[in-house]
Length: 587
Picture 1 (cartoon, one colour):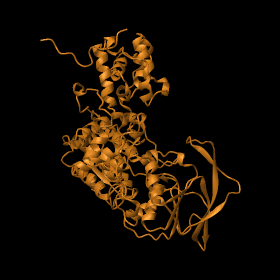
Picture 2 (cartoon, rainbow, N blue to C red):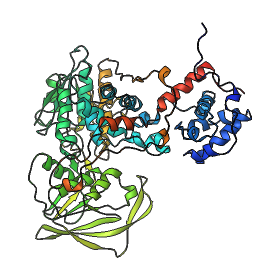
Picture 3 (tube, helix red, strand yellow):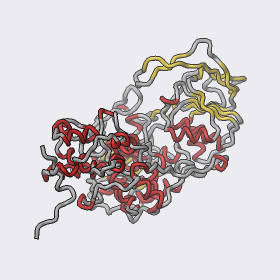
Picture 4 (cartoon, rainbow, N blue to C red):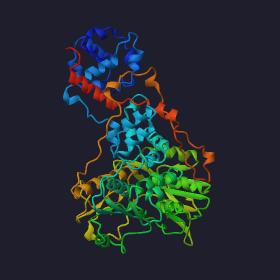
């Protein structure tokens, strides 16, 4: 019996789509028309005139997001998406993009975003959770505090808005709840002992990955709680402690040993750890030391650095702020400190930032939520002096700024505006300009330090100059994001595994849907599906409590949002299959 042709076969018959009237309806409907010279109507015209090479010897077919809006609008029902896919199969090699979808490529940890979003769309959050766990140990944490660089690269944004990838990750984690049974078994014990200094995201990730590979791992933490900046730097209204502890406990249940209130320095020292039989040491102490501004009056009573402020609050210390609080800085820590000060009862909270909103490092959603809570942000404003009376703060002298040519960071350099000084009264000033690691305990013989006060390591192995000593996370790169720290911890674990003769290889993500099951058809209205945003706690309900502000998707919301995904990975695979089968268009 003759095999039945697939829906992709028969594209060699030009008559199938030569009913185009060149009316331009498709181009009018397409959100990409005019961008990078992309125009659906012109592409169809080239096909009709058998000028296939004019299209396939260019990247034009790959600019299409295959959202289907053009096909829906076409009055003659031309299978435009089939044409685009067939053209892709014939593109010259130099115009075929990388196989890895932009969202996965943008993730520092390499999480298979497309796969877990697809599982959620199918109503299988546990399978989505397994995909995430292949790369990271903290799905619930990342679902709340990740800076989601994947979303900035999501091609759905070219249609309307990016998929809510981060919120979907959180949904998968919350739907599973207790992650213990989902995590895979560890490999056979190999007898090697590794010490990890610091229980932040980098340290715990390294411990998790090493333990999975059969290593005996002990984590040394100076604080009375585990988690590093996750526990004492990110407020609980963003990251509930129960969520963090749940994922830490799952790591510890694998057999990782944790020693709290145990700073490594004099006792135990690095040499002590070696003498105790630890064959490799991973330093992941983070960057918990606030940088000084260098302003007159900075030592006054009532001035505190944001990392110290947030840590003291997280550890349950009572802090009297007064009514008027000024926060200096524009990053995540500054926003966190300002919002926490408001929750602790401050009547007026003002953030001073020397550039404009465009250059502000903090995420848009965090800034918006701060403004909803009544926090005022003074842009193009810089402090010049802390004002004191008898050694106690009473105000802060500021000046207006204007932007000049870019500095070494690539952002416009702020310069003072002449005669623009003014004073803001303040009961408390919280500085949040940057942080650095405290390496006062780390002897030079164990590894060199950079000009910026971080540790120098081999960029490939993350090893210092001393045999068996590795370092990663903020202690190497300076203040970074949680996902960057996690990626660094995993990189260190793989490097340590290779150091002991292991493979040092990461898991390979697999697509969760066979290409044979992928129709490529878009449901009616697919292109117009709008992004679903997670619900948030009303500002009136946030005052003087630390309840989580951003809430989780319902199962229905999560599935609807996941179905907005363009499935770029399967689109690429489909073009490759057509290319291999020779199902391209006729010349």
